[in-house]
Length: 346
Ligand SMILES: *Cc1c(COP(=O)(O)O)cnc(C)c1O
Image 1 (tube, rainbow, N blue to C red):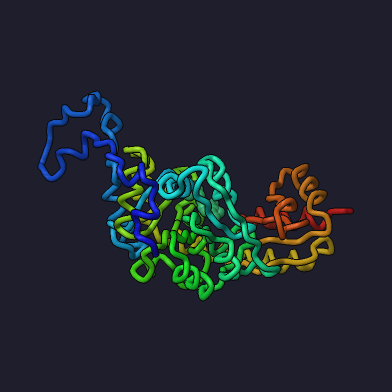
Image 2: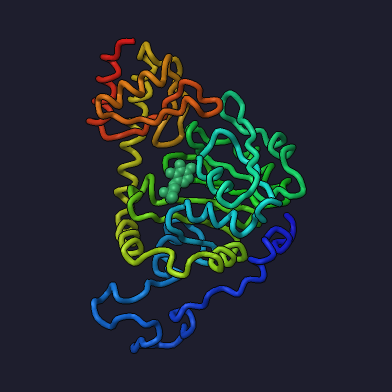
């Protein structure tokens, strides 16, 4: 890995961050707060929330087995994705390399941050070839984007190939593990010590059932986390989200129960899709969704929309011609989907 300073944008490296009222007194036992122009009435919403979300990080640390100093929390992982660009990519000079197809926000945030995005096609089994990605890099490549299990394909990427990138690429490698709760593969968030250039993303939006509260995580070296903290909005995670996340963390057994149930339903749903005459192929999945190649994805998609059933039409995505991405729902929802598809007449 290059020197961190060589990878970070110059203005960000030199940035003197905003110092909030709540940051400056820390360490003292205070009880009269006349420093932040808050209204003293209307507790608890009158006070600014903890800018570094320490209590929540302490609880997450126990669940994720990552030290507090290695955790960044954001308004969804989407905030962390945007911060990667704002910290590392000098607009109109730097570029990033990413697998294709993958999660759309990596490209959208590249465009917003005026950074060249270099997609590299996965193979026909949606697998990664590290050498192919490395060949797409040049001296201005700051970041490689990986997602495992990958969205929209659903499969885990081969870990040897990911490690090859972590070892041989001299910039930052982001490994998005948004769906790792559904998979039994080894976790990259447990390998922070081996790879100083890794940023692992997690979210409460999927297995944790908390998409509405917008809580995403990045795990990385203390130095990278400090850069994120410097650039983020001071109070980026609101009080209600912090409280609700703490509440969810008290009920880990719910998540385990949901994951078991969803994996069981996924197996059933995938088998049923295989038997549909309008389905040509079902791709292997390590997530709470799967990709299915249909005879005519657009027609089936439109037919389902008419019945009030919405799946994701991925037919215009590279390597996904005629593919629908189906999220696993409740038993009742899955049954409704299957019965609609069995009545479909082309
Ligand atoms: C859904 C998803 C996310 C979640 O983003 P949030 O902003 O945390 O809701 C992140 N990465 C991938 C690959 C996803 O599919």
